[in-house]
Image (cartoon, rainbow, N blue to C red):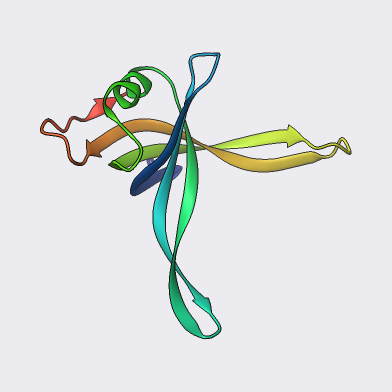
Length: 112
């Protein structure tokens, strides 16, 4: 049952932010269509990915805002505590592999 907690995304880099603990946070915008007043309208959805290791180095060195990435992520359950002290459950998308970087002459596959 390998791969059930995987997500594959293709989208443009919206932001890249380095954190203190060696983690890189990459936001990827993917196209999204939704109905507005009965008509389909184009929109975008932004996904936040966490990365460490070789993927972080690769993205920090070669990627820039607007580049299109194809990535493989692991979906990791995550629990935080809100202001009231209640548990809030969600997910973190952990970047596992950069499958391609458009616009570059040497596209690579980077495994974590």
